[in-house]
Image 1 (cartoon, rainbow, N blue to C red):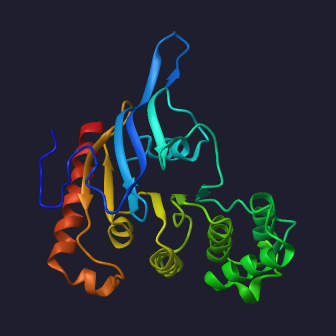
Image 2 (image 1 turned 180 degrees about the vertical axis):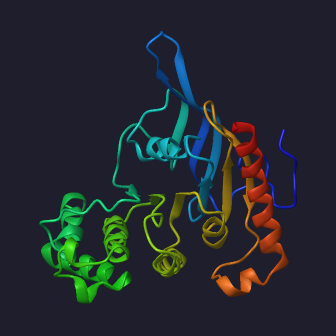
Length: 279
């Protein structure tokens, strides 16, 4: 049993900020094995996310955190349990949930503008041409890519490519943004700048965000709550931590705070315990 601290919420994760929006109850994900048995990846996941809440899920490799995100996205199905968004069961991918992956999923034969426009055309079918142009331009500006709008993916940096992916996801106006280690492939300076840009966008639009990360500092800087996963197989939520800093956040001020290091050390100690157990 995980010990409680001033940062802990109840283990069910129902101490949310805002109206309940994503509700995961007793989720199990298992794959069949050749011997007829099952390999259980996730077991007994209970999590509720508020409609304007930013949460991060963190754990060691193989703990099933990306699998959980794919189930919420509708890209995989749970073996049992329920996953509901705004009261409706998630059974397949939908435009109300958009994914941003670690590796840039841009079409190389389309420009930055065209990559975003393709998503807008596909989802916002009732918008007229002028509205679509306006939406694309708005989201190019949102991620500071107006000047690069007519460049192709191989003509821009990794950080810019990820900004295209984020702009494309937001342009179709999803109710929830799902991000699987979106900054993991970037250098430290680019990662820090893009983290700030994503937070600025979120603070202005306040939609639900669920982000997978390996980085405790990133999770503290960006999140309202941090979901700590136990190791797999049969991984579950070990603990959920409240991040005590209000938005908007200043990274330098946070790092001068005693609470920042208490929270950081608590999360790292949790992960270290499971790393030791795994060995």
